[in-house]
Length: 106
Ligand code: SF4
Ligand code: F3S
Image (cartoon, rainbow, N blue to C red; front, top):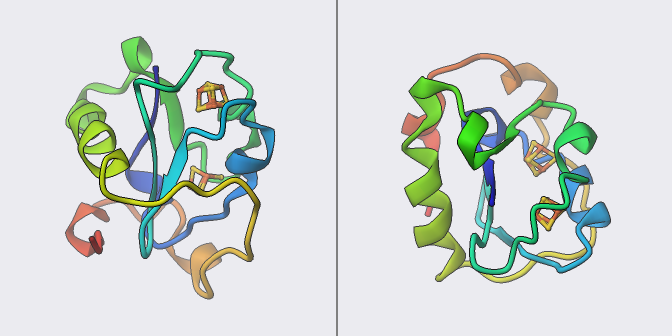
């Protein structure tokens, strides 16, 4: 599976969802996740993310490893998103700030 990691939080550019052939992205208030059961590992989404937040599970940076479980968990409760929206208002201010997990809204 592919995994959405910390740099998506408070940005949510949503370019990723436009290219997913199986609509396996799920949307929360300020973060997206990928359903690991539905993802077919096509890899199309990763280069689309302006925040470079999407990784293959086996290539996750060590400090992002916990996002694998978080994606699986939240994909079960958040609704599917299949069409891009406008990014969050302050996306360009928050991208690459780091330490954003504390701001995750569920
Ligand atoms: Fe969708 Fe492919 Fe990305 Fe998986 S790797 S989330 S199937 S675009
Ligand atoms: Fe998030 Fe990147 Fe998609 S910021 S919403 S993973 S395009």
